[in-house]
Image (cartoon, rainbow, N blue to C red; front, side, top):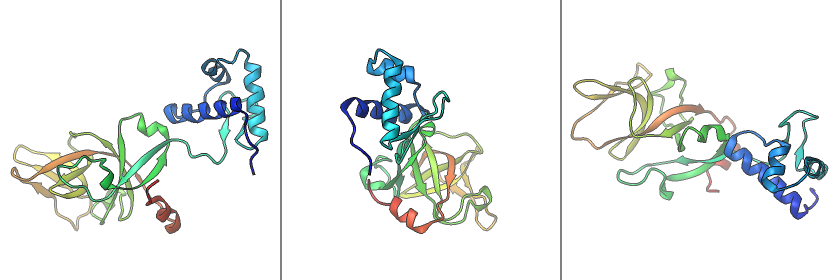
Length: 212
């Protein structure tokens, strides 16, 4: 069981957590001192020593920015979307099935969300049934991009291709045919796929798919 913190120790810990969420790496002792208006870096070191002793972090043995937080999930809580309805905001509460905390580095690229993949149409791109794809929200795409798109009320993950005649959503599996988007169809690019995640443990997967 961890020991309770003093008010100043709590502020130091919260600053470190928030700094990591925003920047993707830990602050230096001087940055902690400057932000919290602590006059001496040595005073910061004493607070870090106390936090380490109480089990909240681990210092890196003289390594600059060598602090490691213990039992803290830092990063950005990224929503996992289920069925998306045309005309409804992408990140509407009704669409969110759960959250997964990812490294803050991903959020620096813009607003992101995770989409649960159904089917094997993208298997040759390494995206399998049940994977979670990380999507950077944007309304346009370049030829060759893998995108999450909405056709009517159905979200799909395909490779985007625009020709003079039509928009094609191409699978990465020869068992499937490209989707030709007709001019009169309701079509929206939700974003560009920038990563794919595979969770192999069923218990871990079930714990993710709950609202936090």
